[in-house]
Length: 94
Image 1 (cartoon, rainbow, N blue to C red):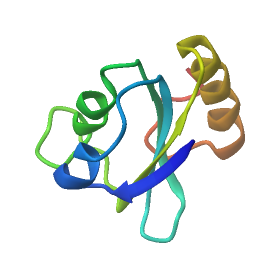
Image 2 (image 1 turned 180 degrees about the horizontal axis):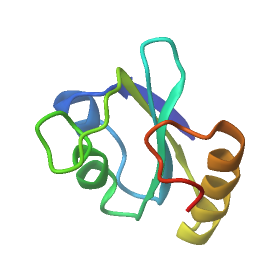
Image 3 (image 1 turned 90 degrees about the vertical axis):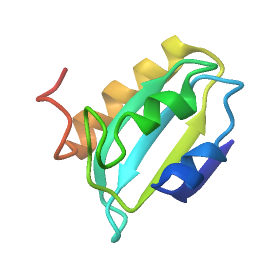
Image 4 (image 1 turned 135 degrees about the vertical axis):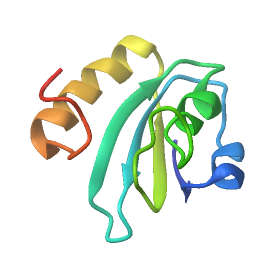
């Protein structure tokens, strides 16, 4: 399942927490600024760590999640997306 919400506290609070996810923080134009993964049960908390005023802020207008069957699958897909899209705020090819 994919879901896109505004990148703010109320949008992040509406995201499902029941499966691991691959998430993308996007600019107003839809360009990837950051790609990451979050474990089941930690989706909202992990994405909230990037909101303005947090410890690791990433600028963005919306966040898109894609639920995955396992955290390993999410991490595999994350590597591919980072290699292809090279989001501005991801560390160089982690």
